[in-house]
Amino acid sequence: MHPILFQYGPIRIGSYGVLLALAFLAAIFFTNREFRKNGADPALAWDIYLLAIVGGLVGSRALYIIELPEQFLKAPLATLFGSTGFSVIGGYILAFILSWWRVRAAGEPFFRIADLSAPGMSVGYAVGRLGCIAAGDGCYGIPTFSPCAMHFPNGLVPTLSAKNDLLTSYFLRLFPGQPVPLDIGVHPTPLYESISHILLLGILLLPFWRVGSGRRLAFFFCWFGVSRFFVEFIRLNPLSWLGLTSDQWLSIVICAIGAALFIRAGYVAPQTEVKPAPSEPAA
Image (cartoon, rainbow, N blue to C red; front, side, top):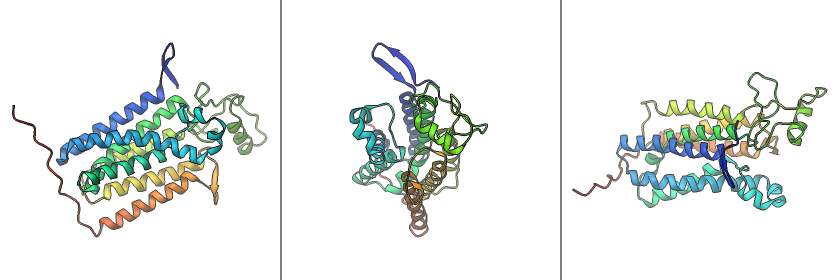
């Protein structure tokens, strides 16, 4: 794990930013592939990419502040512009809203465009979560002695007991009587999510999907929601209501939306009409 890949004077290139850029490139590759294969307008795809980048960054930061307002009140500038402090669900929500607005403004069938974008969303999430592993940004899970435990002694939020009071308190609660290690092993929850969404990508690329019905988008929502809901049980996020974290409640909402889209897809014909891509001028 290398939080900083390169530094020249005040200029620092972080591993999280590099992996985030690779995540967007991977999403662009798969979405372009789906758009070309199905005759959708590539210009619209590039508008969606731009809105997804803006929405992802702003939304993830905004939800983090909403979930942990005490962090923002304690250090507002560091929270707004720091290299940690993102809630990925918030990024997806705002990116989705902005993309929906753009597709509707273009007069394109939304569920067809959303179905074509689902594989790109999946691979983008999978690669982006690897950035959390590379940077050790605190998105890891609770302490564990299992074989899959990872250590982030040099992470942006290190797992060293002397530097991480929250992690140390979790260890004492989970393993009473055990001596606290100098470097506490934790569940690599971003890696679990990355593997989950690589599997999701493989499923979404299978040929049986009816593009335009909304089923592929619905399956993405359900998979994302279920995956995140169960991973939250071994993350460090504080409980908010009825023994669940705020991200678990959002995951339930996302699953419910996915289920509703599946039901809708059974009664509505697939959206198949797409405006032809603008032809290039003759040479």
